[in-house]
Amino acid sequence: MENYSKGENVELALEVSVPGCHSDTTTMLVTPSTKMRDMITTALTKFKSEDQQLWVGTGTAAVKAVSCVEVIKRRTANLHQITQLVYKRVEEYWEPKWDGLDRLKVTREVPTIVILLSKTPLDSSLPGYQAPGTLTGDFCRVDAQQRRRYKPPRGRHVEGVVHSGQYKNRNITSQLNEGGERQEEGPRGTPKVQERGRGGGEGHKNTKGVQTVV
Image 1 (cartoon, helix red, strand yellow):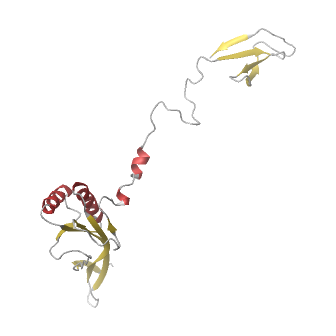
Image 2 (cartoon, rainbow, N blue to C red):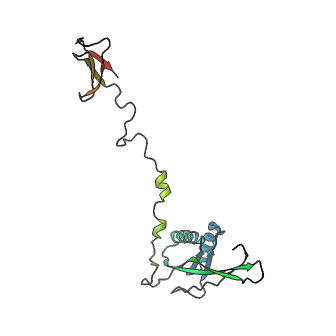
Image 3 (spheres, one colour):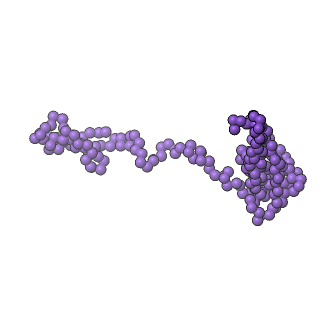
């Protein structure tokens, strides 16, 4: 593409046909630069005197459109919904830098979400229908990042972790055996550490008991 320069973009008109949508229904077009607070305020004001609204979001604005719809559904009772996924065509033109080259046209299809909200009942057998009181499942799940940021409460026991001071003030008895080696017994009486007694050698016997507090 080094022989071409970027030209104009032409967005083809999006043809939307949602069953049950009236011809005079207000269309709320959401763009990446749309401010959600202003859009929601306008939509709630219009819904006081209207029965339907059609929300459209293309590309990265699709998620923002869904978020606006969920807020509207929480603040307006008994709204029926039909959701459709369509594709908007965008034609990109590339201009040649040298004579003898043809102009190029690249057609892209951008995913677009279309949501119809209606106070009057809609056909429940249509694909994408949602009854009043239901929310979009993907936006009601716990965010994975929130789960990763979760930390267990402090002071709780975690299996496999030994906290410092767990064996504090527990008596461990040490005795010197007949071979001059010191033998320590753990909490359950099992030999824990064995090392050569001080000043002991072969044939040295010391039966004096020594008690150590840890």
